[in-house]
Amino acid sequence: MEDAHVGVVDLGDGNSFFGVFDGHGGPEVSDWVASNIVETLKANENYKKGDYKQALKETFLALDEAMQTPE
Image (cartoon, rainbow, N blue to C red; front, side, top):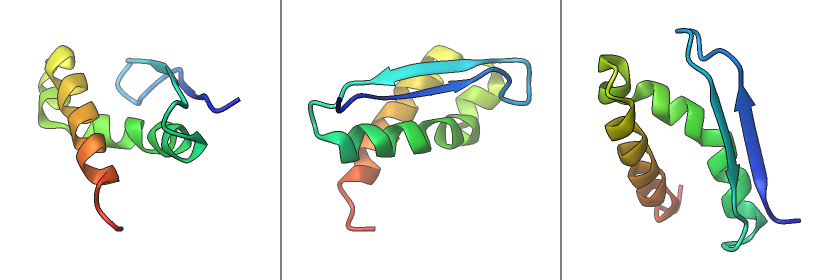
């Protein structure tokens, strides 16, 4: 199976995060997203302000952009 998942009961602020990432891009992509999404989300300024909807959008866009860099 190429899907990956993440589950964090408490992000340190009372919020939880659960996600399943489809592996259509290959297992490397879904594994990488699962490994990096929580850290990226918590660093987002809108997340810190409590605008979770915008923070999730920006987090996914940031991860998309980061996957396009050689690092």
